[in-house]
Image (tube, rainbow, N blue to C red):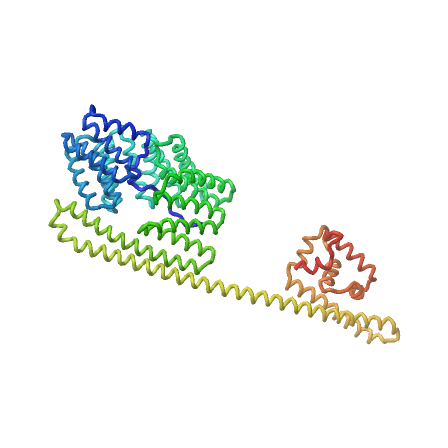
Length: 587
């Protein structure tokens, strides 16, 4: 099974990336209507900011207008909507310092707001921002959001979002994953919002796909496919309400489930369905050029190729994906994953030189990704420090040096571990290549040994023929010389018996060297071959002529020909098939 990473949408896309394109016109009508009060335009501007995320400048402009209008309102829940949405934009841009500054403003509004639903959404988005910045404290904010919504019945979309986030974070804990994905889907159904329900079905499908028992329980894969198909059907039933990336996410994960299913029980239907998913993805690919979308698209193509064992196509797709991400600076994580995937593909094909090359490249990309992550971690820590400075400034100043040192040591140890791991991996591949060569050499020696044994057997057969001919001459002498005394005749007969024993010894040795000889003959025959039939077969295998066989068995040449004819019938050979050729080639 090829290694594959389960696809999950970014949390920020889940919260603010609602793809209700049809709602944009109505929202613009609201914000452009001079008769509508400013406070009633705040949420509309915030939603427009989410809809136009692909155009960062436009999205930021809408968000700043919402913040500006909210500062003029007495009701602070407007500020919660506006600031939390602005914080998501800065988070997606990677600006940790401004993100934490916005969180501070949002929390100030939450403290003064009495609107439970708005406060829950605020904590939800604060949690998303922190988790996107790799701050685990974001989980606390998610739980706060759920606590606020515990006794409400009209915020199912936010509850589904909270449980989706918890599901994404607890992927390695199957019990928690099962619980949170189930709750996310239940809340999504109650929300009756297509985009929320689409993601609810997808995250539930991931739960079955990540179950450690799915390799031995095909029903889990069927459950995963059922969930992903629900997401796919929603996209088709509600055009314009669900993002293309969510649709592609479901297509790719469903294809992976079919790939796993095909590995357990091969079925052409699985391959045909994956091909259908590829065709559907090709349609939406034409209007999407975002790098994350393209990487997921190539992953789908890679699955379609590997499930057919078309490794040449899989290699081509992987190289195209690498070329695509190489057009942009950074993206080291994508470059690392694609290079490592290609190295694994080459390893499976025993192309160890190429595998080692791309394994080294993946290590280089991982080091760059790690360095980039270190910088972002430093920025995030600095921003968090500024955020908490107001309450714990003195305490934070005393512990910051130890904190940075601990992080540096941890990152250094992690880097050393990765270097050692990849070094060992490269060494292992080289040793595996040497071992493969040794095995091929040993196989060659074994073939030579078998050939030598066969030649020896043939040589012994020739000697046996000579002994048998000599025995016949002695018997002829006995018949022609009736005057030979009894003692001499006994000596001749004993000598003949030794010759027969030699022949039987050859039969035994033939059976030891080629144990399948008699078995294959019996399996081929329509009727069971007698011991005399097998004796004739041995003589034919020894390449004895009909005359030699007649002399050996003390029969006429005519009898030998008739016996050969009967053998052809018993062995079900056609008129054009040669008995001698068949017996000599049966081993």
